[in-house]
Length: 272
Image (tube, rainbow, N blue to C red; front, side):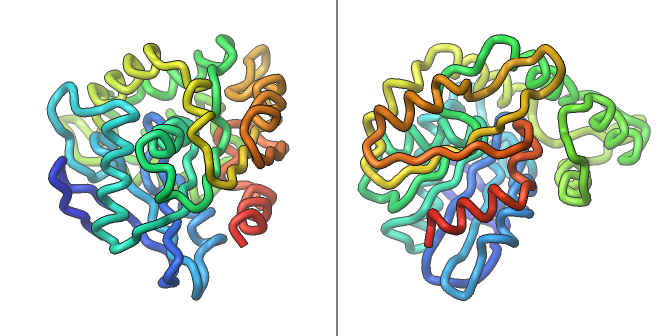
């Protein structure tokens, strides 16, 4: 599905055809296909799940410098809801997508009926960041072919367990390049979002969560000696400070959490 917005054209994938709209927002250097598992799991005759390629990712437009950041992505998500005819919608955000969700709550809390934050809420532990940044370094590199690219991603060891869902996610992003293939996701867009995040205090956004909210936390670090994207302390702080919020731990890391059956089960119950 292609959505033409004033800020640019976005690619999206839709699961189900129900009247309730659930919009899914991916992480920093990911794309809409990271939600294939959850889209298939959550869609029903009553619920449509729409996963977006944010600008600069996947097959959405790459726009000029200065057009990224959580606030701009949030405005795009609200415009997507408008384009789909939804006055209110549910929001599921993974990683940076969760911060975009927090920003949507700041801009238009009344439009979000339920909010799901997957493994992001406050400031990550410092030792959690190297694996995330290592994944970003793949952008702009040329690989001999798609198989070589996927093999390079798997060698990072951060996506665990590997599955056909992740295979599709990484192959989806590839385009021909001199000497082989390269990810279409634009390094400049990702770097601008990293710079933007470094200026933000996400805890200040928690107070905007007037809707029922669920934090789904990865209970495994990204590797030996690595920290957590959401610390146990931040999980407890979130539940204590956000009125009516819930939190659940999943036995997975930051990537594996969005293809984990228990994640789908907890979100399905929360949205019911």
